[in-house]
Image 1 (cartoon, rainbow, N blue to C red):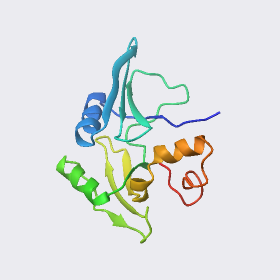
Image 2: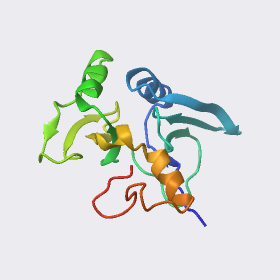
Image 3: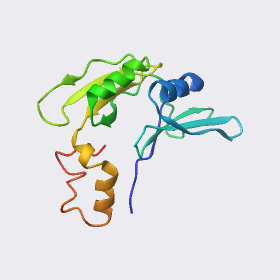
Image 4: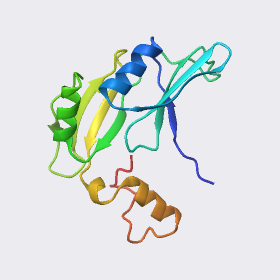
Length: 160
């Protein structure tokens, strides 16, 4: 049985403001913006090319506890060209750090930003994804063809 990570509920103080930020500043697609039950609204947004979405909620109970806005850090997006991604975010008005290269290896360059509530994001450059998109690696692995499809999910390979 597969256990797929598909939605991360992100705590925010103002769902409309957060939706606008993720849609207009980051280019996420709005998948759902609806009252899912009386008094409970869900806005689900997906980054371009991603299989995982974020959900912004208002009035939706969480049986395991209520996270506080601005407390999530370490959320991470991956891009194949961090320079182009940086220019796009700056052009959209996002306050984002300059890219920081920690090592010469692919996957070792990052930039950082926060959403309006202070939830922290990293953007990682992983150039290999240009030739080996994650969806293809995962599909090959599911089909049992992992031998030549890279090593998605193994040590040394960032799959997200």
